[in-house]
Image 1 (cartoon, rainbow, N blue to C red):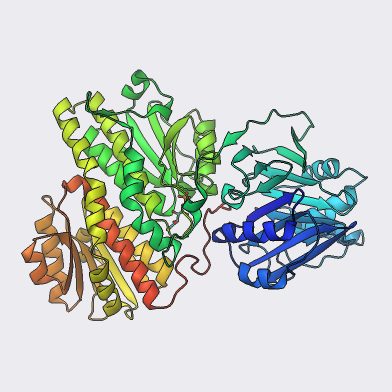
Image 2 (image 1 turned 90 degrees about the vertical axis):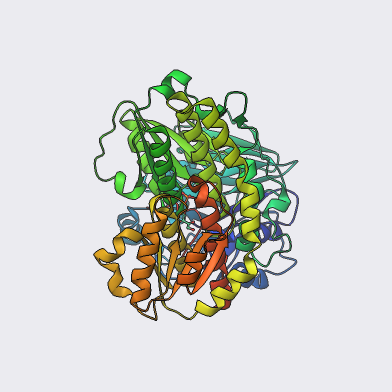
Length: 607
Ligand code: F6R
């Protein structure tokens, strides 16, 4: 949520800030702004709307070589120019940008107002600027540290002062911040994508740390002013990975990248000789892995759906009980953390607050938590005991697609690893591995169905209610299909286990409410066909996704999407892709903003 970028160096800051914000726009896009130092003063430009509005408002020749910028996803205060960041203190000397939520801002604001401070926005963030200004005695870093002692809540902040040319101070508590180390210039951002065009050398700030930077140098310290030795990391992502690359939008690009991203997720991790997988980052010995008696996945949204598929697969293949739970629920239900349970925090961004806090709660109780993350160096990746990077490359579209299928791969690899320690024979391991290796090609063939899926999407785009139905390992895929459709097309869609419809949802069935059926290739196929007939008998239109050549399904469904036949355990891959395309083409048909759907933001760093 929200994006921060800061620049100090020899170049024109405003241009670098606006370009950086464009890269971060996926993190929040209701308003944006920049503040730049200029001859002992601060120039602030902020605008409601997308970065394009800001870009138009920023003069091409705006002077200044040090500044901060922000793209907002509103929490406190409506979407207005005044509530957009950066926020200035009353004297106009201090400018701050803030991600996160200041929980005690009401009390702080009241106190400051009593002291005569006049506020100009409704945000919680403005108190940070006012507080720093009041505590400033000629040393910005010190003033920031003093102010932080008064704050309760989460923050990633970047601060500049009119009297300290070239200096940016940043601090983090629960909201990511990354330092970009350039040649004679420094950057600060909430996300490496904002700085990839300028440097690959980055330092991840930890909670409780503060950075003070000038073009030539930076210093990291903790709240008590103890110096912290910074570890410089090299970013592997290429700049073209964050370009649209000829596609009309990021979501389309990311859907079509899946044959490669899936292959990347298992690349170098299969050991044919032993019929197993090699997961170097788990940080668990074979003995420790062998002792696992239960697997519990914690995640949110699409990552939770990947966790549901993963736990279904794990339990059925390894016979180790496994389940997936919503992180936002787990944290507040006083969970029992059992010895010999392995927890897995699955998160594309690695920054989702719900998942991060749930993970910390489990760790505090002595649980072992592995991370399945995409973003290298993200908080969940760093704080987990070990994990699996899924290497899907940057995912920019708000609706997650390629990260989902890569997360699935991580679960399939973990399943193979654990299964081979228990009942799975070498031969069965090889078959499982071969099935996994055939997924990229099956997905590539599925993507060739794009025109057919677009035609179906056009036919149904004006319907207002959809049901997505699947059983077994395809139940989570039904949930994911419904989520994709609602989040980018704003059409109401529900995902259900198809065996469950007769227990209530069937009341929704009518000629105006289509059902999308995922037809499994295993023993549940017959049962699913019965469910389809129940819908048909009540006049409900049916779109079926089924193995190619399934004539019976074709004869029942109004429209059928025939996908390549794979081992039924691997159907989540071939079944989710048509649903991603269906949501994408429906949103396109309805003229929606596919990459930046309303009210949403990538990387949900608030609870
Ligand atoms: C849906 C979507 C969200 C995320 C959820 C968790 O398309 O993207 O539901 O899956 O916010 O995000 P991560 O995976 O970053 O923890």
